[in-house]
Length: 232
Length: 268
Figure 1 (cartoon, each protein chain N blue to C red):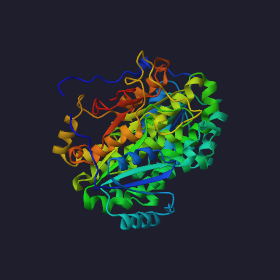
Figure 2: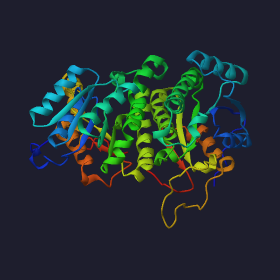
Figure 3: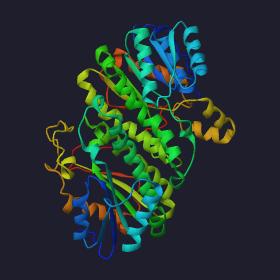
Figure 4: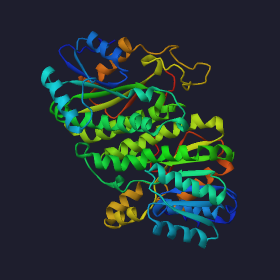
C-alpha cells in the first residue's frame, strides 16, 4: 500500500466564485501539508483585465501555485426553478456569465500555471452529467466548464499544465434542498453505500493529480461518487 | 469503401410526421437546410428560421419542390423578441408547434483560436447562438410542446466539441453546455410528455467539402476514420435520423446525445 500523497511545501490556490462547493476539499489539501491560499469573493469580475489583475495580485502575494482549484458557481445557478419560469437575466448570470468568468480566470492563470506546469482541478457535483430538473442552467454551466477544461487541457498540455474534473455526489458538496437529484435505480445503487467525504477522501485524489504520479492524467473526468453512476 | 450505398428511399417516410409542425433554426443553409427538407419530405410543416430571409426562402423553395409546406421567418435566435415573433408566426400559421430543432451555430464556431485570444465579442457571438437561443426557444415553445403530446426538442451539439476540441475553447464549452442542457431539460420536461435529445452530427457540409478538396491526402486520412467510409449527407443521413427521432418510433428515447456520424466518434 503506497503512502498517502502529501503536499508538504506545495502552494495551492483556491479560487471560488459564488457558492464555494470545494471549501472542504481545500481544507483537506491543507491537512495534507499544502500552503493554501483562497481568493474569489474580492475579485472584480467585471472585465478580463480586472480578473487578471486580481489573480496576478494573489499570486504575487502568495507565490506561484502548484495546484489550482477552480470553482465558479454563481449563487443564482443554485436556485432550482423550471426553465419556463426562469427570468432571462438569471439564465444569463447563471450560465453565460458563469462560463465567461471561468474563461477569464483561466486566461488570467495562463502565464502563471504555464511557467510552473501546474495542475488545475475542478471539483463539482455529478448532477450535470446526468442532468437535473429545475437546474438546467447549473447543469449546462458545469458541463460547459467541463468542456472548457478538456479543450484547455489539449491546448496547454505541451506546457506541462494538466486540467482535470472530479465529479462527486452532489450532497457531499452542498445540501441541494428541494432538488430532485437523479439517482441510480439499482439493488445496489451506491457501491460503497455512502458518498465520499470531501475533506478526507476527495482531497487526496486532488493531491494525486498535482503529484508527480498524477501528471499523465489530463482532460479526464473522475467519478468520485462512491460508485453510483460508474461511467464511462 | 468497397460496399455499395443505396440511395435513400423517402417513399416509406412520407407521412411519418404528417400533421406536425417543426421549427428548424439555422435553416438557411447547411445541415439546417437538410433537416428542413427531410422534415418536409416526412410530411411536417416546416418553419424555416434563418438569419437572412433570402436563404430561408431558398430552403423553403426546396421543401415545396418536394411537395412539402414551409414558412420562412427571418430570425436572429440570439434575440428573444425575434424568437417570440417566429414562434408566434408559426402558431398563427399552423396552430401550434410540435418539434423544435435548434441547429443554428455561430459563424465563429469553426474559427480556431487559443483560449488566451478569446475576447468578449467572440464570446458573446457564440454564446448567444449556442446558449441564449435554446433558452429563448424553450420558453417560447413550452406550452405548445406540452399540448402537442408528441413534443420534441432537439439541440445540435458536436462530438468534436464534447471531446474538447483544442482549437476553439468557446465551441468546446458551449457544445458541452448543450449536453448538460439536453439532459437536464429531458428530466424536467419528461413529466410533460416532451422528449429532449441532442444530436452530434458529422455532415458533408459545403465547408467540409471545400476543406477536404483542398488536400486529397488529408481527405483520404480523414475519411478513413469513418467506419462507414464517408461523411453524412445533410438531408439523407442527418435529416433522416432526425426525422426518425421526431417520429413515434423514438418516443421513448430522451436525455441522450445521439451521434449521427458514421461511427466517427465511438468513445462518448
